[in-house]
Image (cartoon, rainbow, N blue to C red):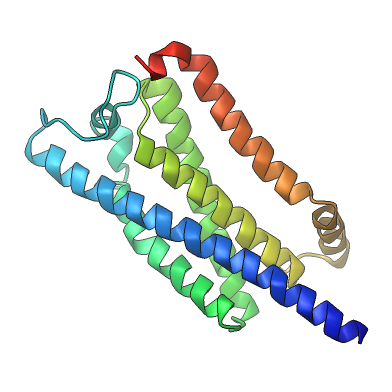
Length: 205
């Protein structure tokens, strides 16, 4: 009986984890598609007016013209077009009950951790170096955060990260207390606070 209850709770948890990953990855993919189209548009016409350029602060064109917008020699949004379909596939498979090999999930965590760090690097460059914000980029940052935390939660729970027993037990204990959700809320709240504090009324002028 207890085993059945535990398995049911685990299945419900998996639904929330993979559903969050799926919705977030779809939103990020949509944003990447829009950003890719806008990047091609502005490359052809640097003076083009973009739909997401509303004022001096909310201005996708300013962000796209900065060197950080194509750090690898092509628009950063192209990376989203590559990565997000993989996340969507993993999420759909997870909802269907597929269990991937431990090594695959560990590699996925490493890859998405790099994407998570990159997303926040671009956010800070945009907000504090360029001095402009791109709404689609912000959506990618939020979506990347949700996928990262969901994937991390799953991998810690399933012992996919090749951690020591002591470290794994400590992280599971923290998750059971909801610290991962607290971390996510605090991170997103900090991002919102930084934007509002820095730009204040400029966002709406």
